[in-house]
Length: 92
Image (cartoon, rainbow, N blue to C red):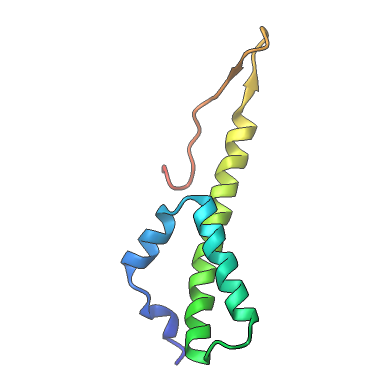
């Protein structure tokens, strides 16, 4: 039973990392709502918890990337805005 979290296929994890932030957040909110309902069987509850953790990581990564982009946004002397290229952990 300690190895339940290893039953997730790499394909599912790869699909999660490709989700846009909004989609991942909607799925995460849906999972939380179903878990809070108290009507989910234990086995399904564990699976939803694992999926929720993956989606949470996706959302955190998207937010971190957005924060980095905002930090890289620089105002030029003439008032125009320019982006500078930066490396994320996924780019490396």
